[in-house]
Amino acid sequence: MEKTLYSILAVFPTPDIEKTAKFYNEVMGFRVVKYLEVEEPHICLYRDRVEVVLTKANTHKVYTNRELYGYGEDSYFITDNQEELQNEFISKGAKIVRPLKMTDYNNLEFVLEDIDGRWIAFGMKQK
Figure 1: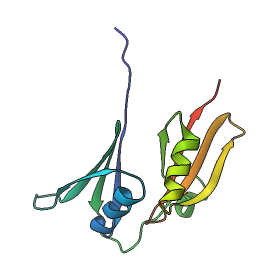
Figure 2 (figure 1 turned 180 degrees about the vertical axis):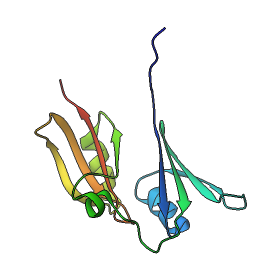
Figure 3 (figure 1 turned 45 degrees about the horizontal axis):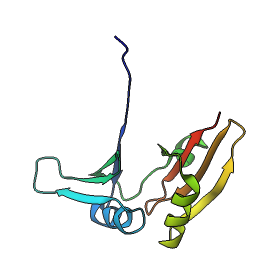
């Protein structure tokens, strides 16, 4: 029997989960479900088949992959309608840090910066 991975759930620690959740809802169209009165407070964000969990960071700042390692996005969402999605995010005020383009590794992608400074890529390998 084939063993296939179908999805990934991203966990984003953040100093202010309410502020981050509001950004993901208003700018990126995620549905917000709060679990703030539990032992490990968190907020779940849902859009299509993607789930992001926000947890309370014990720092006042998010340290991105660029800062810690010199390059790289903090998350990569696979999608096949990049142009429409990029336009939606721009219309809602998202900061696009790399507009839609074909990369040298054959992915059609764009990258936005979220409210915490994370770079989130949206793309897909091209044939």
